[in-house]
Length: 415
Image (cartoon, rainbow, N blue to C red; front, side, top):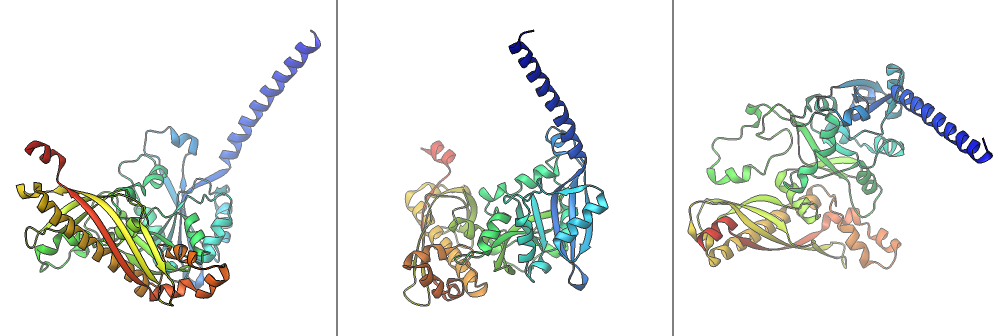
């Protein structure tokens, strides 16, 4: 055997040796880890935390190719801090808690109202926690919310946690809020944090609204819902509708479905959404319009005085989605009337939402401060303006321009 052949032989043996033992080491490491899919944080007695961990009972590798429902378990521990809770769970499980596959972090409303900066900083400081993990504020206990989250159309709870925010793009009923973005806005001097508003579906009796409400308001009632107060029923009891609004690290308010549509539209995070607007051709009637933004929201902020003046301009195309047997909807002059009605309705809706964030919540969750900062020559000048406190004195001017079209199918049929 010549020297070259011998070296090649030795090299191949070394590669085989490394691959064999690295595989064993990998398997051993996975056996010693407890993979967290979700973590829920509640307030407990004596200013302690009650932390719930939802674990996968199979490894992430096994889950990825599974076609059966993969079970999970939820274990809870009380501790003085989140770090101590993780440490106690490590001992309880005789395995090391691993957060690298954690998809969602859930805080109870009760705890969020007292401030969650300590927990946010702890999680962000953990290199295993992904900034893309979603953050949910639930109107119930976080532990109860986790127990009631049983996806119907997914075999893996991990998969459900990964995709459940996708509907924000085509309904506008909830944001895609991550802990990374929450942390960035928490330390930001130009904006405020927000999170997904979660909850558990209440009984029908709790969801029933006054039977004396006129039919005129029925279309609007569909958009005044939020988590724990919706008419939905099914096998899954948890739901996510609305936005949890923060001032600093403290929960200060909630947005319903229509206000969430307003938030995501102005923030350029809604690809499309359905709304019901007053029908200008028929009194006490509403039309369903499917809206698509035409371009990015145009924002101008005037900071010449202590009361910011904010101009917001949006353009949409809309298609009539639900119609009665009425050929007037095909006439250009009627479509123009509907466009005008849509403009007026959205301008009023968006304006009400903006004034609510400023006057009621005092929270710039839209980040108008980033546009306002360009009015100042130095960072010091902007900081002296104290944007986050000045925002509550803001005035708004909203301009909406929509182009409404009738149903393509009906238009082509009658042309």
